[in-house]
Length: 461
View 1 (cartoon, helix red, strand yellow):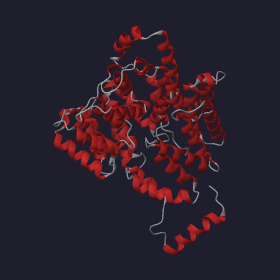
View 2: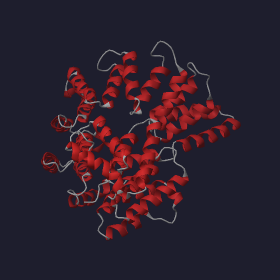
View 3: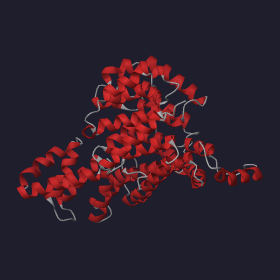
View 4: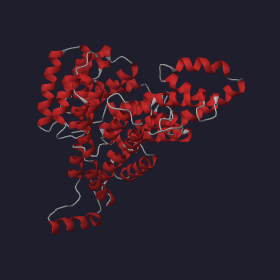
């Protein structure tokens, strides 16, 4: 990466004079991120980003983008754009960001495609997967593009990312289970180059119920992680696969063992341990769960506050305490959109002594626009039941429709009640509002973001 001499002169002089002690460092920032120390990472990235270092601008943008706050996400985009002026890698990240941006316009999707294509042509292979996802999610924008043909061409060139794009295509087509053999072969081939393959292989063996291969795979994963060849977040993702009952016979004990090994070096795993126990009560008692969450809080993990809020919200593990729930959920809400769903329910259901409809609407809408289908259902109930708010059939219909599209179990029953009540004028108004709400959510942006997260790009080696 090239920088003007005058930009490098001052920090270089300071480093020589001070022996580099205490100076911001991208390597230290990355190490801090790996162990879950976001504050240290942000401080180091911030100092270097101010000097125009593109990689630090990207690192700082990644931290901001993970925050659910709209202002933080706006700052993330600004940082991506600044870095993209000089860095092909940043152009790929900006393209990925625009592709998954809530409420992105057609023009922004077009810009994303141009950025990703340019970055890919500049040698950033990691741009390939988000480019394919963009084509898959918005086929109407590129009717001339056949994603499978593109992938076939890239695979013929021997590009590892093309194999990963094929796996993404299998996921979106619902044919993942029918191609387990191919996925296993692909990920065995690229395991050392693309760490997402550790998760894919664990998924394959979980679906197959192949305990012997899974055990060998986990032994290999432990060795690779201890040798520093696999990042801790990938180990955590494998543990979550083991605990996922939707992928075959779950093995929460194996997941717990893996997370217990990981947590002392990677504090985010403490919260995953607590969540695992929340979902599997036979793994431990409430004191152990609270100990996990305390360690997560000490490491500034917002998910710890989210789970504590849930514990006091639902009263399954300890006496229900809505005020403590509110306290923890408000703290978590800055970066955890799910916290807004529970806050909205607290205010909607009157758990604090009375209904707060304005607060309920505010928080439920944040949660719904962040992809929480249950929040759409809660909004439909808010407007149909009229607890503390004037009943509004049109609004109830809009959010009920959105919940039904996301296959919320009780949505169909509510919609069958609402449908006959709507007049032609109300139905027309509802369709207009529904279209506006879809635009506010950026169409399929949440599905796009989920695919990109599950298939994290790997930098070319």
